[in-house]
Image 1 (cartoon, rainbow, N blue to C red):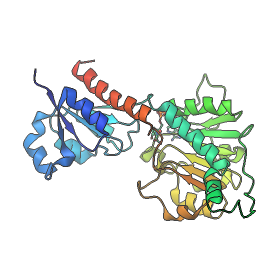
Image 2 (cartoon, helix red, strand yellow):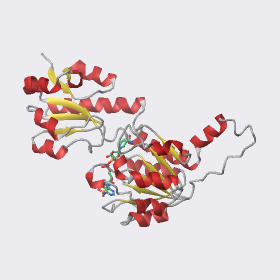
Image 3 (spheres, rainbow, N blue to C red):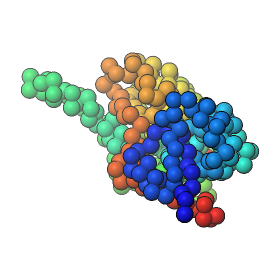
Length: 307
Ligand code: NDP
């Protein structure tokens, strides 16, 4: 039986390309010199395509995928995919939720501990020979017994909450809808929650609806003793305010996995000791990336099996 043609819109991990190639006749659009010409000539062949949160799926691309009915995306976030327009055009979008909950939550906890305990700054302190010269590193902050506010309490936020409990934190949360079966205190007002918290962890979707939800006012309420962790999307925070407040120490510390214009990170952050930076690594472990890849394949398989 001949393999079903499958259009791959952007680069993917080699394991996923290999797995897709076992079952589908893959075509890498991103390797075509003239992608537009290729699509104009061959789009009717492809009922299915694969993308990722990094490559995305914009309306102009959707218009070119004239026969596509399913796009299987690598990643859980859909802010870089125009899902509403795709659905309107009769295209289903599949993503890879749940399998990345634990590792993304672990990144949030890692950044919280690394920030509050000044791990990166102190690593530099040792390497620069300052300890050996008799200098003392400043005291860090503990998290036990501290109030930690989650902005978002969905699949990943709930896992972060469970892990925070193991560190003796008092978990509170802000979402648009209070969860009926959850005993953590819910705040309608994010500024109020930030004012009550030692740390705030952003784990809500990106996109227009959440743009700048973590505002200057929220960060100021968190204050000089406060720590802001972002494992959501760069767009959920007012990044200009974030950088200014970290520089002036009006906000104490931050641990950031995501940025507005990735892979470009505001250069002012590089000189700061009170921020820990990561290149969007929340789900980036060998185990989780493999599980996400398997999910991309099974989402396609399920579609073709009419499930
Ligand atoms: P879910 O959809 O399960 O949960 C989203 C949560 O955000 C819900 O509790 C929702 O509650 C809340 N929320 C949505 N809009 C708002 C708002 N305007 N204000 C406050 N809360 C809001 O998503 P996941 O937990 O699976 O993932 C969350 C996001 O994490 C993803 O969309 C992705 O962008 C990011 N992510 C980042 C990774 C990384 O590598 N750093 C890896 C994986 C995911 P309610 O609807 O009641 O408001």
